[in-house]
Length: 403
Image 1 (spheres, rainbow, N blue to C red):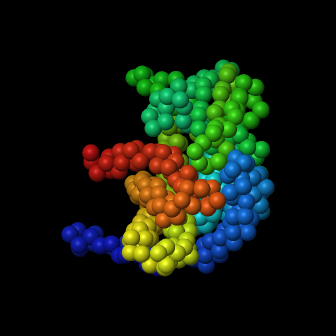
Image 2 (cartoon, rainbow, N blue to C red):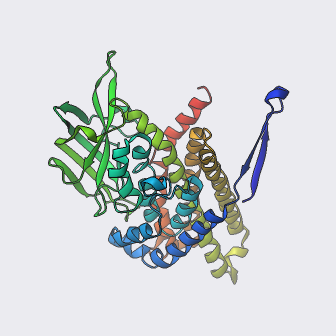
Image 3 (cartoon, helix red, strand yellow):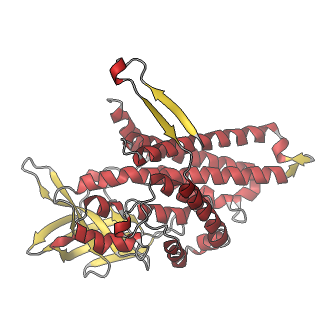
Protein backbone atom coordinates (compact mmCIF):
# COMPACT_ATOMS: atom_id res chain seq x y z
CA UNK A 1 0.00 0.00 0.00
CA UNK A 2 3.00 2.25 0.20
CA UNK A 3 3.54 5.15 2.55
CA UNK A 4 0.33 6.54 3.96
CA UNK A 5 0.71 10.08 5.09
CA UNK A 6 3.14 12.24 6.99
CA UNK A 7 1.52 13.74 10.06
CA UNK A 8 2.75 17.12 11.26
CA UNK A 9 1.93 19.24 14.27
CA UNK A 10 2.17 22.74 12.71
CA UNK A 11 0.85 24.58 15.77
CA UNK A 12 3.34 23.02 18.16
CA UNK A 13 6.45 24.97 19.24
CA UNK A 14 9.40 24.50 16.90
CA UNK A 15 11.35 22.51 19.46
CA UNK A 16 8.60 19.84 19.63
CA UNK A 17 7.71 19.76 15.93
CA UNK A 18 7.92 16.26 14.55
CA UNK A 19 6.58 14.05 11.81
CA UNK A 20 5.25 10.52 11.90
CA UNK A 21 5.56 8.56 8.69
CA UNK A 22 3.33 5.51 8.49
CA UNK A 23 4.61 3.00 5.96
CA UNK A 24 2.20 0.19 5.14
CA UNK A 25 4.38 -1.37 2.47
CA UNK A 26 4.74 -5.04 3.37
CA UNK A 27 8.20 -6.34 4.07
CA UNK A 28 9.53 -9.24 2.02
CA UNK A 29 8.76 -11.60 4.91
CA UNK A 30 5.23 -10.27 5.34
CA UNK A 31 4.56 -10.59 1.60
CA UNK A 32 5.82 -14.17 1.66
CA UNK A 33 3.50 -14.92 4.57
CA UNK A 34 0.58 -13.32 2.75
CA UNK A 35 1.28 -15.40 -0.37
CA UNK A 36 1.69 -18.54 1.72
CA UNK A 37 -1.66 -18.03 3.45
CA UNK A 38 -3.41 -17.19 0.18
CA UNK A 39 -2.16 -20.38 -1.47
CA UNK A 40 -2.92 -22.48 1.60
CA UNK A 41 -6.46 -21.07 1.86
CA UNK A 42 -7.21 -21.69 -1.81
CA UNK A 43 -5.82 -25.23 -1.86
CA UNK A 44 -6.56 -26.60 1.61
CA UNK A 45 -9.64 -24.67 2.75
CA UNK A 46 -11.67 -23.30 -0.17
CA UNK A 47 -12.66 -26.72 -1.63
CA UNK A 48 -14.16 -27.81 1.69
CA UNK A 49 -15.38 -24.59 3.37
CA UNK A 50 -19.04 -24.94 2.39
CA UNK A 51 -19.05 -28.63 3.32
CA UNK A 52 -17.60 -27.88 6.77
CA UNK A 53 -20.06 -25.03 7.25
CA UNK A 54 -23.08 -27.19 6.42
CA UNK A 55 -21.87 -30.05 8.60
CA UNK A 56 -20.80 -27.73 11.45
CA UNK A 57 -17.51 -29.62 11.41
CA UNK A 58 -14.35 -28.46 13.15
CA UNK A 59 -11.42 -29.41 10.85
CA UNK A 60 -8.69 -30.35 13.31
CA UNK A 61 -6.43 -31.38 10.44
CA UNK A 62 -6.35 -27.83 9.04
CA UNK A 63 -4.96 -26.38 12.27
CA UNK A 64 -2.35 -29.10 12.44
CA UNK A 65 -1.29 -28.12 8.93
CA UNK A 66 -1.20 -24.45 9.94
CA UNK A 67 1.00 -25.45 12.87
CA UNK A 68 3.39 -27.07 10.39
CA UNK A 69 3.48 -23.71 8.56
CA UNK A 70 4.32 -21.86 11.81
CA UNK A 71 1.08 -19.86 11.77
CA UNK A 72 -0.01 -20.55 15.35
CA UNK A 73 2.49 -18.36 17.17
CA UNK A 74 2.78 -15.23 15.04
CA UNK A 75 2.78 -12.90 18.07
CA UNK A 76 4.89 -15.08 20.36
CA UNK A 77 8.70 -14.86 20.75
CA UNK A 78 10.83 -17.69 19.40
CA UNK A 79 11.90 -18.50 22.96
CA UNK A 80 8.41 -19.86 23.57
CA UNK A 81 7.87 -21.59 20.24
CA UNK A 82 6.52 -18.70 18.16
CA UNK A 83 7.85 -16.69 15.24
CA UNK A 84 7.40 -13.17 16.69
CA UNK A 85 6.31 -12.03 13.22
CA UNK A 86 4.27 -9.09 14.55
CA UNK A 87 0.82 -7.60 14.32
CA UNK A 88 0.96 -6.72 10.63
CA UNK A 89 1.98 -10.30 9.86
CA UNK A 90 -1.03 -11.53 11.83
CA UNK A 91 -3.27 -9.16 9.89
CA UNK A 92 -2.11 -10.25 6.42
CA UNK A 93 -2.38 -13.93 7.42
CA UNK A 94 -5.92 -13.53 8.77
CA UNK A 95 -6.89 -11.37 5.80
CA UNK A 96 -6.07 -14.11 3.30
CA UNK A 97 -7.62 -16.91 5.36
CA UNK A 98 -10.74 -14.85 6.10
CA UNK A 99 -11.35 -14.17 2.42
CA UNK A 100 -11.91 -17.91 1.99
CA UNK A 101 -13.38 -19.05 5.33
CA UNK A 102 -14.34 -16.75 8.18
CA UNK A 103 -14.64 -19.63 10.64
CA UNK A 104 -11.06 -20.81 10.16
CA UNK A 105 -9.76 -17.24 10.44
CA UNK A 106 -11.90 -16.65 13.54
CA UNK A 107 -10.56 -19.72 15.31
CA UNK A 108 -7.00 -18.67 14.51
CA UNK A 109 -7.44 -15.04 15.58
CA UNK A 110 -8.95 -16.04 18.93
CA UNK A 111 -6.05 -18.42 19.49
CA UNK A 112 -3.41 -15.85 18.53
CA UNK A 113 -4.80 -13.02 20.68
CA UNK A 114 -7.10 -13.71 23.64
CA UNK A 115 -6.03 -17.36 23.76
CA UNK A 116 -2.27 -16.79 23.89
CA UNK A 117 -1.41 -13.21 24.81
CA UNK A 118 -2.49 -13.41 28.49
CA UNK A 119 0.29 -15.94 29.01
CA UNK A 120 2.80 -13.76 27.17
CA UNK A 121 1.91 -10.55 29.00
CA UNK A 122 1.23 -11.87 32.50
CA UNK A 123 2.57 -15.40 32.81
CA UNK A 124 5.63 -16.44 34.77
CA UNK A 125 8.52 -17.98 32.88
CA UNK A 126 7.40 -21.40 34.07
CA UNK A 127 3.81 -20.78 32.89
CA UNK A 128 5.04 -19.62 29.51
CA UNK A 129 7.05 -22.78 28.96
CA UNK A 130 4.27 -25.01 30.26
CA UNK A 131 1.20 -23.38 28.68
CA UNK A 132 2.26 -20.82 26.06
CA UNK A 133 4.86 -22.86 24.18
CA UNK A 134 2.40 -25.63 23.17
CA UNK A 135 -0.02 -22.91 21.99
CA UNK A 136 2.65 -21.17 19.93
CA UNK A 137 3.71 -24.46 18.34
CA UNK A 138 0.10 -25.26 17.49
CA UNK A 139 -0.04 -28.37 19.63
CA UNK A 140 -2.94 -26.81 21.56
CA UNK A 141 -5.62 -24.18 20.93
CA UNK A 142 -6.00 -21.24 23.30
CA UNK A 143 -9.22 -19.89 24.82
CA UNK A 144 -10.19 -17.08 27.19
CA UNK A 145 -13.34 -17.32 29.31
CA UNK A 146 -14.95 -13.94 29.96
CA UNK A 147 -18.59 -13.84 28.85
CA UNK A 148 -21.31 -15.09 31.19
CA UNK A 149 -25.11 -15.22 31.02
CA UNK A 150 -25.26 -11.90 32.94
CA UNK A 151 -21.97 -10.37 31.80
CA UNK A 152 -21.02 -9.66 28.21
CA UNK A 153 -20.52 -6.02 27.39
CA UNK A 154 -20.82 -5.43 31.15
CA UNK A 155 -17.67 -7.43 31.78
CA UNK A 156 -17.26 -6.14 35.32
CA UNK A 157 -20.47 -7.93 36.29
CA UNK A 158 -19.02 -11.43 36.04
CA UNK A 159 -20.24 -13.83 38.73
CA UNK A 160 -17.74 -16.70 38.45
CA UNK A 161 -15.84 -16.90 41.72
CA UNK A 162 -12.44 -18.23 42.79
CA UNK A 163 -11.08 -18.56 46.29
CA UNK A 164 -7.97 -20.09 47.80
CA UNK A 165 -8.38 -23.25 49.83
CA UNK A 166 -4.96 -24.38 50.99
CA UNK A 167 -2.83 -24.78 47.88
CA UNK A 168 -5.78 -24.81 45.47
CA UNK A 169 -8.04 -22.31 43.76
CA UNK A 170 -11.68 -23.36 43.89
CA UNK A 171 -13.70 -22.03 40.95
CA UNK A 172 -17.50 -21.89 40.58
CA UNK A 173 -19.56 -20.34 37.82
CA UNK A 174 -20.62 -20.49 34.19
CA UNK A 175 -19.11 -19.01 31.04
CA UNK A 176 -20.95 -18.81 27.72
CA UNK A 177 -20.09 -18.21 24.05
CA UNK A 178 -16.50 -19.35 24.63
CA UNK A 179 -14.43 -20.03 21.51
CA UNK A 180 -11.82 -22.80 21.16
CA UNK A 181 -12.28 -24.49 24.55
CA UNK A 182 -14.06 -27.63 23.34
CA UNK A 183 -12.00 -28.88 20.39
CA UNK A 184 -9.71 -31.93 20.33
CA UNK A 185 -6.79 -29.47 20.33
CA UNK A 186 -8.03 -27.41 23.30
CA UNK A 187 -6.08 -27.51 26.56
CA UNK A 188 -8.86 -25.76 28.51
CA UNK A 189 -9.05 -22.01 29.07
CA UNK A 190 -8.07 -19.00 31.13
CA UNK A 191 -11.17 -17.94 33.10
CA UNK A 192 -11.72 -14.45 34.44
CA UNK A 193 -13.10 -14.74 37.97
CA UNK A 194 -13.87 -12.62 40.99
CA UNK A 195 -11.51 -13.46 43.85
CA UNK A 196 -12.81 -11.31 46.68
CA UNK A 197 -13.23 -7.60 47.32
CA UNK A 198 -11.02 -4.63 48.05
CA UNK A 199 -11.17 -2.69 51.31
CA UNK A 200 -13.67 -0.29 49.75
CA UNK A 201 -15.96 -3.11 48.62
CA UNK A 202 -14.99 -3.33 44.94
CA UNK A 203 -14.57 -6.69 43.22
CA UNK A 204 -11.13 -8.15 42.73
CA UNK A 205 -10.66 -10.04 39.46
CA UNK A 206 -8.22 -12.86 38.84
CA UNK A 207 -7.40 -14.98 35.80
CA UNK A 208 -7.21 -18.71 36.51
CA UNK A 209 -5.88 -21.43 34.18
CA UNK A 210 -8.35 -24.34 34.08
CA UNK A 211 -7.26 -27.45 32.12
CA UNK A 212 -9.68 -29.82 30.38
CA UNK A 213 -10.41 -32.94 32.38
CA UNK A 214 -10.29 -31.19 35.75
CA UNK A 215 -13.03 -32.68 37.99
CA UNK A 216 -16.07 -30.42 38.09
CA UNK A 217 -15.24 -28.72 34.76
CA UNK A 218 -17.98 -29.44 32.21
CA UNK A 219 -17.87 -28.36 28.57
CA UNK A 220 -21.27 -27.95 26.94
CA UNK A 221 -22.40 -28.91 23.47
CA UNK A 222 -21.61 -26.55 20.56
CA UNK A 223 -24.11 -23.74 20.11
CA UNK A 224 -26.35 -23.75 17.04
CA UNK A 225 -25.34 -20.42 15.50
CA UNK A 226 -26.51 -18.37 12.52
CA UNK A 227 -22.98 -18.24 11.17
CA UNK A 228 -19.46 -19.27 12.14
CA UNK A 229 -20.58 -22.90 11.90
CA UNK A 230 -17.02 -24.21 11.90
CA UNK A 231 -16.07 -22.22 15.01
CA UNK A 232 -16.23 -24.24 18.23
CA UNK A 233 -18.34 -22.15 20.64
CA UNK A 234 -19.61 -23.64 23.90
CA UNK A 235 -20.76 -23.09 27.45
CA UNK A 236 -18.24 -23.83 30.25
CA UNK A 237 -19.44 -24.81 33.72
CA UNK A 238 -17.25 -24.88 36.85
CA UNK A 239 -18.61 -26.76 39.87
CA UNK A 240 -16.09 -26.62 42.70
CA UNK A 241 -13.25 -26.97 40.22
CA UNK A 242 -9.92 -27.19 42.04
CA UNK A 243 -6.68 -26.19 40.33
CA UNK A 244 -3.21 -25.62 41.83
CA UNK A 245 -2.32 -22.26 43.35
CA UNK A 246 0.27 -21.77 40.57
CA UNK A 247 -2.56 -21.71 37.98
CA UNK A 248 -3.18 -18.06 38.87
CA UNK A 249 -2.16 -16.07 35.78
CA UNK A 250 -0.67 -12.72 36.74
CA UNK A 251 -1.34 -11.01 40.04
CA UNK A 252 -4.31 -11.84 42.23
CA UNK A 253 -6.73 -8.97 41.65
CA UNK A 254 -5.07 -8.06 38.33
CA UNK A 255 -7.23 -10.19 36.06
CA UNK A 256 -9.35 -7.39 34.66
CA UNK A 257 -6.24 -5.54 33.53
CA UNK A 258 -5.09 -8.72 31.77
CA UNK A 259 -8.43 -8.96 30.01
CA UNK A 260 -8.41 -5.34 28.84
CA UNK A 261 -4.83 -5.46 27.58
CA UNK A 262 -5.50 -8.64 25.62
CA UNK A 263 -8.73 -7.31 24.17
CA UNK A 264 -6.97 -4.35 22.53
CA UNK A 265 -5.04 -6.62 20.16
CA UNK A 266 -8.08 -8.85 19.80
CA UNK A 267 -9.98 -5.93 18.33
CA UNK A 268 -7.39 -5.60 15.58
CA UNK A 269 -7.78 -9.27 14.72
CA UNK A 270 -11.59 -9.10 14.64
CA UNK A 271 -11.35 -5.91 12.57
CA UNK A 272 -9.27 -7.94 10.12
CA UNK A 273 -12.08 -10.47 9.87
CA UNK A 274 -14.40 -7.65 8.84
CA UNK A 275 -11.88 -6.42 6.29
CA UNK A 276 -11.40 -9.87 4.79
CA UNK A 277 -15.15 -10.46 4.62
CA UNK A 278 -15.71 -7.15 2.83
CA UNK A 279 -12.92 -7.95 0.35
CA UNK A 280 -14.30 -11.43 -0.30
CA UNK A 281 -17.82 -10.11 -0.91
CA UNK A 282 -16.47 -7.46 -3.26
CA UNK A 283 -14.46 -10.00 -5.27
CA UNK A 284 -17.39 -12.41 -5.56
CA UNK A 285 -19.76 -9.60 -6.54
CA UNK A 286 -17.48 -8.21 -9.26
CA UNK A 287 -17.00 -11.69 -10.72
CA UNK A 288 -20.72 -12.42 -10.70
CA UNK A 289 -21.66 -9.01 -12.13
CA UNK A 290 -19.26 -9.47 -15.04
CA UNK A 291 -20.56 -12.96 -15.85
CA UNK A 292 -24.30 -12.58 -15.23
CA UNK A 293 -26.34 -11.04 -18.06
CA UNK A 294 -29.62 -9.14 -17.72
CA UNK A 295 -31.51 -7.33 -20.43
CA UNK A 296 -28.96 -8.61 -22.92
CA UNK A 297 -25.82 -7.22 -21.25
CA UNK A 298 -23.57 -7.95 -18.26
CA UNK A 299 -24.99 -7.02 -14.90
CA UNK A 300 -21.88 -4.90 -14.30
CA UNK A 301 -22.83 -2.59 -17.15
CA UNK A 302 -25.87 -1.31 -15.25
CA UNK A 303 -25.12 1.90 -13.36
CA UNK A 304 -27.08 0.77 -10.28
CA UNK A 305 -24.75 -2.21 -9.89
CA UNK A 306 -21.67 -0.14 -10.70
CA UNK A 307 -22.53 2.24 -7.87
CA UNK A 308 -22.96 -0.64 -5.44
CA UNK A 309 -19.58 -2.08 -6.41
CA UNK A 310 -17.93 1.33 -6.20
CA UNK A 311 -19.28 1.86 -2.69
CA UNK A 312 -18.22 -1.64 -1.63
CA UNK A 313 -14.69 -1.09 -2.95
CA UNK A 314 -14.41 2.28 -1.23
CA UNK A 315 -15.63 0.92 2.09
CA UNK A 316 -13.28 -2.08 1.92
CA UNK A 317 -10.36 0.25 1.32
CA UNK A 318 -11.42 2.40 4.27
CA UNK A 319 -11.47 -0.68 6.47
CA UNK A 320 -8.05 -1.74 5.21
CA UNK A 321 -6.44 1.59 6.01
CA UNK A 322 -7.88 1.61 9.52
CA UNK A 323 -6.90 -2.00 10.27
CA UNK A 324 -3.40 -1.59 8.87
CA UNK A 325 -2.92 1.63 10.80
CA UNK A 326 -3.88 0.04 14.11
CA UNK A 327 -1.57 -2.92 13.41
CA UNK A 328 1.28 -0.60 12.41
CA UNK A 329 0.91 1.43 15.62
CA UNK A 330 1.06 -1.70 17.76
CA UNK A 331 4.15 -2.95 15.94
CA UNK A 332 5.79 0.43 16.50
CA UNK A 333 5.12 0.27 20.22
CA UNK A 334 2.80 3.29 20.03
CA UNK A 335 -0.60 3.63 21.73
CA UNK A 336 -3.18 1.88 19.56
CA UNK A 337 -6.23 1.15 21.73
CA UNK A 338 -8.42 3.90 20.25
CA UNK A 339 -7.38 3.09 16.70
CA UNK A 340 -8.12 -0.60 17.33
CA UNK A 341 -11.61 0.27 18.58
CA UNK A 342 -12.19 2.51 15.55
CA UNK A 343 -10.97 -0.18 13.17
CA UNK A 344 -13.14 -2.83 14.81
CA UNK A 345 -16.21 -0.58 14.74
CA UNK A 346 -15.77 0.52 11.14
CA UNK A 347 -14.71 -2.76 9.57
CA UNK A 348 -17.40 -4.83 11.28
CA UNK A 349 -20.18 -2.52 10.19
CA UNK A 350 -18.68 -2.27 6.70
CA UNK A 351 -18.62 -6.08 6.57
CA UNK A 352 -22.34 -6.31 7.37
CA UNK A 353 -23.25 -3.70 4.74
CA UNK A 354 -20.97 -5.20 2.10
CA UNK A 355 -22.32 -8.70 2.67
CA UNK A 356 -25.87 -7.41 2.35
CA UNK A 357 -25.06 -5.66 -0.93
CA UNK A 358 -23.27 -8.76 -2.21
CA UNK A 359 -26.39 -10.86 -1.68
CA UNK A 360 -28.46 -8.16 -3.36
CA UNK A 361 -26.19 -8.18 -6.41
CA UNK A 362 -26.39 -11.97 -6.63
CA UNK A 363 -30.18 -11.76 -6.41
CA UNK A 364 -32.01 -15.03 -5.80
CA UNK A 365 -28.79 -17.00 -6.18
CA UNK A 366 -27.29 -15.03 -3.32
CA UNK A 367 -30.04 -16.31 -1.05
CA UNK A 368 -29.20 -19.94 -1.77
CA UNK A 369 -26.46 -22.04 -0.21
CA UNK A 370 -25.23 -22.85 -3.71
CA UNK A 371 -23.22 -19.62 -3.73
CA UNK A 372 -20.55 -18.93 -1.05
CA UNK A 373 -21.73 -15.34 -0.71
CA UNK A 374 -24.59 -16.60 1.47
CA UNK A 375 -22.07 -18.09 3.93
CA UNK A 376 -20.28 -14.77 4.26
CA UNK A 377 -23.62 -13.02 4.74
CA UNK A 378 -24.45 -15.35 7.64
CA UNK A 379 -20.97 -14.85 9.12
CA UNK A 380 -21.06 -11.06 8.96
CA UNK A 381 -23.41 -10.00 11.77
CA UNK A 382 -21.41 -11.52 14.63
CA UNK A 383 -18.55 -9.14 13.84
CA UNK A 384 -20.55 -6.24 15.28
CA UNK A 385 -21.12 -8.25 18.48
CA UNK A 386 -18.04 -10.31 19.31
CA UNK A 387 -14.92 -8.85 20.97
CA UNK A 388 -16.97 -5.86 22.11
CA UNK A 389 -20.18 -4.72 20.42
CA UNK A 390 -20.34 -1.68 18.16
CA UNK A 391 -21.94 0.17 21.05
CA UNK A 392 -19.01 -0.68 23.34
CA UNK A 393 -16.52 0.48 20.68
CA UNK A 394 -18.33 3.80 20.49
CA UNK A 395 -18.12 4.10 24.28
CA UNK A 396 -14.36 3.41 24.16
CA UNK A 397 -13.84 6.01 21.43
CA UNK A 398 -16.05 8.57 23.17
CA UNK A 399 -14.02 8.25 26.37
CA UNK A 400 -10.90 9.09 24.44
CA UNK A 401 -12.66 12.23 23.23
CA UNK A 402 -13.11 13.29 26.85
CA UNK A 403 -16.80 12.40 27.09
